[in-house]
Length: 372
Image (cartoon, rainbow, N blue to C red; front, side, top):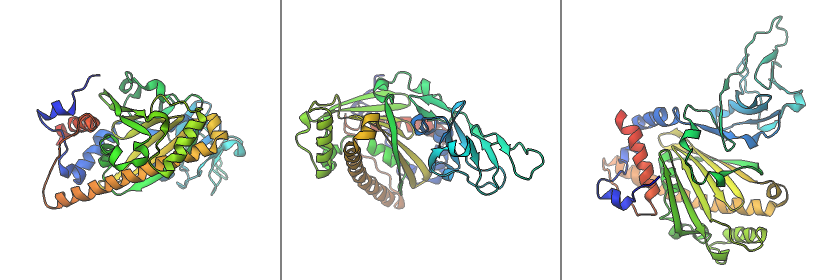
């Protein structure tokens, strides 16, 4: 899908958001209703529960009140709350094999099968037939969604879909970070490459933003960046370890790209790095707070036998994430200072490095403004 550059857009009007869109509870309420409740709503990947009987409690979703369960129907999203006295039943990630393929509440021993059907309620003469609630899921490349939007229609023309193929990969871990800034600020920083070289010495000497290419759809944008030649000049000690692992694993051959960053609106990111896939999901928790739920996936041989590769990649990812946090908090503080003074300001976009932010802002305005 063709898209005009930010420079041409700015000859007409800037789509930058008013400052109050980052602080007004009414805007936040509209976003929750129009963007998130009506969105595709990512809940996890099928690789989290690869075998029948596996479960994975989603700690970030309703405080662990939901879980993915692999059963005879495939992978389903079930309630993790007992229908008797509303206790949370399972913790973490594991298998129901230990309970003969049953989910058992630890307090009164109400017992459900892996499809959520109540099969036993001690000391009740008749089965109360109170089954666990379940939510239908749709599957795209193993990514599981529990919302009303059609992910297949939204990503039907995605040019990098093959790069987001999880076949041969395994789930490694999830990391959750809580932030005290508006969720849109995170997405904005993610969608621009203008800051990469000046603020990310490690990342900026791994990827080559001079080779930035954009792809756009109605509900997404993609950044593909090159890799620095032969990875000979690491920008930090942490990235030096990552450079060495990539070169060792690839016998010195450069990867096809430095990174591919897909943003599926409003707030899901799927990231390609050499022999690594990362899913990053921003969950708004308030007008000025959000969670980032980050999942790491690697080819099976790396996950099982290349621990140094995994640790080096995640350390590099964390270093860049912390630097991005600094930018987000700086923007949050500056915008709040303007908001408290009743001032709204918007700076120009750098094209092509900030064209993705233009696309995101245009999309937000289309979604929200008709309802103001």
